[in-house]
Image (cartoon, rainbow, N blue to C red; front, side, top):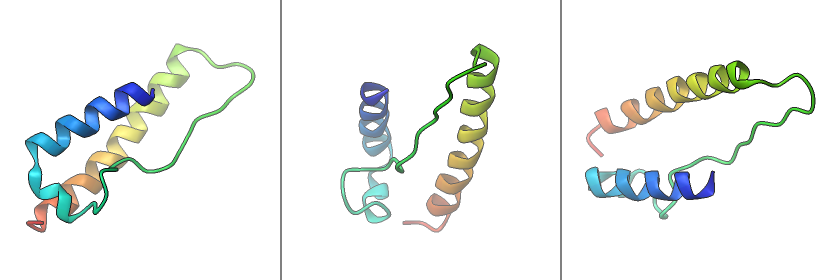
Length: 68
């Protein structure tokens, strides 16, 4: 997961250089994790990721719309 985050972060910073004004350091990911011990399957993980994408996309769009 760390490699995915690093590669995605690098790509975002290259495509949107103005994001440096929003995120002062070279980190654009928030601290978070998903943990479960029993009963997890692919469908549960997919729902979790889709929910996170909706939350993150809304936050990023809001910040980029301010013209930073």
